[in-house]
Length: 272
Ligand code: MF3
Ligand code: CO
Image 1 (cartoon, rainbow, N blue to C red):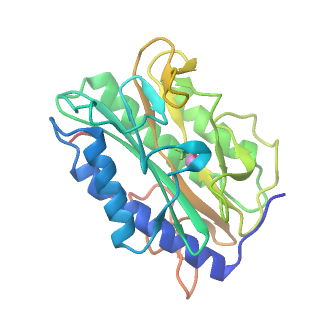
Image 2 (cartoon, rainbow, N blue to C red; image 1 turned 135 degrees about the vertical axis):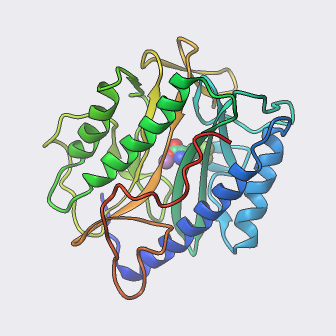
């Protein structure tokens, strides 16, 4: 069942998403050579708690930490560890979820530590561009397949591998709700997008082939060919005025403020 959310529910999701975005910014500011991913997990936990939210990931299917941090060839679901020390040139994917009054938000960004190899910089910028393209297809009356097709088209232009085993998803009173939102087409297929549908759109692009494998820890997903992977995610609501990205004050008690989906909601630090 796909649930469409009303104003009071969306306002809770907006608050959860705001907490996620502000905390992600703090986590990115903490990404420096010599810092452990465990330390960034602590930044994430205190960032969410100090803003009055609850972390969404701890205990989710037994997940042991607050944030997922996926380095280099890791695609998603990397587990923070005191043994993982950030080094120059690392690609760092940060994925975070929060809950406010039972309503969830989920978002991810990828940054790289200088010196960043040029193909990696392009991968990061293109994956973010694909997120915005997918968001632009969150149009009432359109189809979920249109979102995937928009994302996939951006990858194809660069011959990136598009991860197929993991997909975006509905979100609301659970972290993962129906429908699934693949990062590939065809357009015009799958569910009709209706007003109030809330979707986590999350392209995962690989510099090489699309294939991924999961580590023995049961969580860490990495590329089979060992090449780099990038991931961006937003929690988005379909409104009569167009797509609204939650967490940036664009959804307020007054109305949904929309604009071109190509806006930069936050300074995008491809490299830090
Ligand atoms: N954003 C991730 C997803 O939608 C959440 C990771 S699940 C957790 O799949 F187990 F890490 F919490
Ligand atoms: Co997600």
